[in-house]
Image (cartoon, rainbow, N blue to C red; front, top):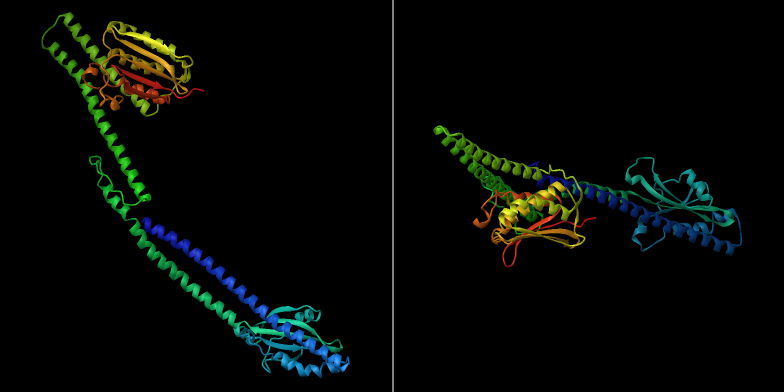
Length: 486
């Protein structure tokens, strides 16, 4: 199971989900932490600044009414009247209920507090100095008797000017316990939920992956049944349009190609055996006859001559097979040069002029200007055209003509060799270039069925297209179309 695709997919997905949820949890945690801290700081500043502004207003009013500027008045009179009211300021905002306020003098001594006699967080010395210079300051203060969240306070201190030049410090503070408790609960919840979500998702992932891969499992069972003797078996594609269906179709196409290849190889072996069996049988029979009794020198010479001819046939078959094998294995190295097609074709026709004369077949040439040059191997191209010309002469009737036409097909040179024979049956046209394939008796009087296969291999090695077709009125034509030349 641990080596299965569905387990690996589930594991990768669970790992990706775990990383994603962890990053999301960290982002949510820090966002909430920042939001709580900003809200608390805004709340403390709002309360402290309100008390400071009110204190300064009342003291200024008292100074105007009394008309005195004495330090004694600053710590008496209006201050003692309004200070208790300011630190116990009533509000309908429930968030303000947890905010405590203290009023301190310049030395940091407490003058008034909303907490009564309960212990309050003292401002650090550095904060006192900063506030006395006229700058408000935030602090996180921990009481001396423990570092529990209940003993950690967030504080905001701001200055307030009094009569007689006196300066007061207004401190608003609030316990960080509620915020820390909320953050702690969030941490606990996330630490518990992330693994649970990942595990549940992994379990569901395994289940859905198993369902999604059921067609693959079915294909695997079918594939195990396929052997060299059972290549006709095919996979049943699932009723989907996903990658699984594409995989099944590609595998079936591959099986079709393999089956065709196996059948071709079997036919090839059978054809080779058949082609070699005939000359070998003839040779064996003649030798057995020669050994039964003494023969004259002439008779022995005739038998040896016949055996030599059969040996030459076998040699030609083996040579052609080796040529095809070299093309199949891409072992033929073409010696490219600029080849004049008309000259090459006339040279090839000259090599077959004796055969053409014996058969009573005339050769005609038709050339189109600009279609002569082609890039290729002269020897291989000559072999290609010799095969086509020999084929055309062989199947042309006495008194017939073989026409060779050189022209431009699109922007590429092309050569068309046609005869006036019986033509090729329509059922045989798709197979005419296969090895050892010969059409019906009208076109199978000689040869081994390898010439056209070799011709096709040479053409493909030059990136050329070769095709066969019948001509209206009788005869057949073979056309070689080369790619555009540069």
